[in-house]
Length: 433
Image (cartoon, rainbow, N blue to C red; front, side, top):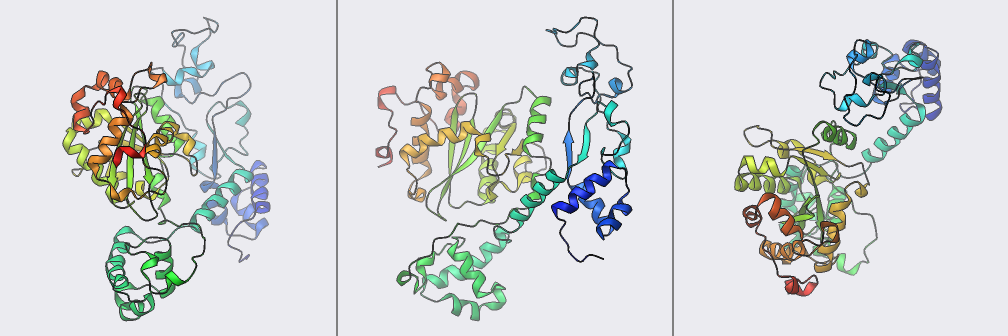
């Protein structure tokens, strides 16, 4: 049997071709000299979902439409189609019809789990589950890239190691000395400790090491903690758009981090898209617990009903600080309080409102500035000036005024924001001096 563990693009093309010809997993496995479970896992892990209709019929996965038992007409108030045409034929009814019931083809629950070789595929208007070699290869390469980046260490373990290493480094001891006399506590090699400190994961900096000052540092890309990608299952951008369609009345808030110096304090920002209002909270380090603590504090200070009304949906990027979604979504008693979703990797443009507003923060705190030198009171003052600044897309109103009109000024006071007169607004570093 083939000992090569990873499938190649040629192997995936063979799988797609054989599935189209209705060959079994065992038959495909024999062709590729692989185990049949390998083929089954490959197909199930890389299913491409397509919401396409068929000849003369739009996509519609409603049970009644599939059974041709629905005769409802004019579900859409402003329908421009033929008045005698039933709604299921155009496919737009699934978002507004109260009789909609999702139907999934039972054939997809058993091998081959995809529609590639289905004889009814050309006549089916349900969601298609397909195996495509190019799509599978792209997903495989993305997972492989992510698995080889970052550090596979938990925040709790990192804090325990940091508590041993950083105080001794600041005393002038070398990492070699520390690694020898604390081997049982650290359980990490000297080389690993060097990687951690050079990437800014410890409280002590590499400049605290005795010889570092005399050696020119090498330029390298910074690394972060490895994030468990399973936390984003059911919370990706596609799930976000689907949830918004199911709950069109719930607004989404965009959350992000503003960095200062490497390994230093950061800001958590929460952006109210419709009102253009942005909040900023100071954090001493960029870990997930600091984000959880902020949301727990807001939940207590605002009271549950107000918190749920203000933060029904959150959209975050793929940073490690947002890698514990359950602790944000539920309170300490296990009651749901919000829903968090994630943008695609390396796609900040998917939450542009939050990113654009960061430009105003950078006018006051330029890139490379140590955010740890400021207090939360100074950050609140900065956000008061930013949120009092009038915006053209708000009808020349300020975010403060629009938010106060919709939610009341009492909540703004709870956020420690105040209205700054127009002529007194300062959007430069002079504000915090």
